[in-house]
Length: 337
Ligand SMILES: NC(=O)c1ccc[n+]([C@@H]2O[C@H](COP(=O)([O-])OP(=O)(O)OC[C@H]3O[C@@H](n4cnc5c(N)ncnc54)[C@H](O)[C@@H]3O)[C@@H](O)[C@H]2O)c1
Image 1: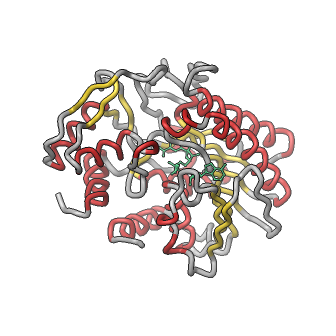
Image 2 (image 1 turned 60 degrees about the vertical axis):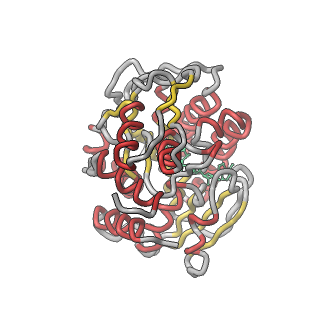
């Protein structure tokens, strides 16, 4: 179902995109039943693209895309991206399949590495055969515990290659290196956004898959303790979904983005404790803030330098943290605040 908030946000994204680049294009969205992937499907279909989703539903949800099932321009294939094959001619591949939540990738490190390595190799071959443009969803985690903040794309990262997060960080780093090799050796038209903490409606909130933002909101709405790791002074820069999806689509369409890695995120840095307090204040919940040990290798600060995105895509995020957070809470609770 598309509710009012999602509907308005799709219209906002469309209004940020000029021209008809996506109209009539056949687009494969891997991980299309997930948070960001399902938003891409909504926007692409409303811009006149044909969309094929491949998803194994490891963290994706039917409810994110069930409203699209009757659309003749939409096709869903339940499959592992590592094995998926498509005979129809593709114009664009938006490769979003991945294990984005720390609990989820730490519980399934082998599958996480496989999706990044074998899944990305499979998508690179498919893009090569089709002469298609390939966008790969990388992450701010490739920088690890960054020593330069705001972090530019030129920073090489500080990553523990055998730590608990390495299946995700190193998997994405391998995928980036693989795609740069395809670009250099075969001329593949790739572009690699490094996404910094995106949030908004459809971000999974339950148990194992919940990330800090959605977990805190759920805890507040059910008056459970809000569980902060460490002292909560570690920072993140949260980017609302309309800004993330606009950035991804502009990068897909930009001829200047070929072979480039580009940060996508909001530059407003917020501590995790601040996030918990803001959610408490907006929801007026009775939850206590509960402190738990900080997981190993948790990055201390995360804030992107988005100068390159501004140059290549002529775009910078426009939804401030307070507005995006309120919108997300309204969507999760169904109440006005
Ligand atoms: N949300 C963020 O803040 C963020 C930040 C950085 C990077 N990313 C990247 O963006 C992509 C999308 O993230 P998201 O937040 O939408 O996560 P998500 O978990 O909501 O979506 C990922 C989707 O990929 C699917 N998937 C996973 N492994 C698969 C496989 N082997 N074959 C087929 N489908 C598979 C899942 O079922 C899910 O639908 C991921 O690659 C993630 O690493 C997200």
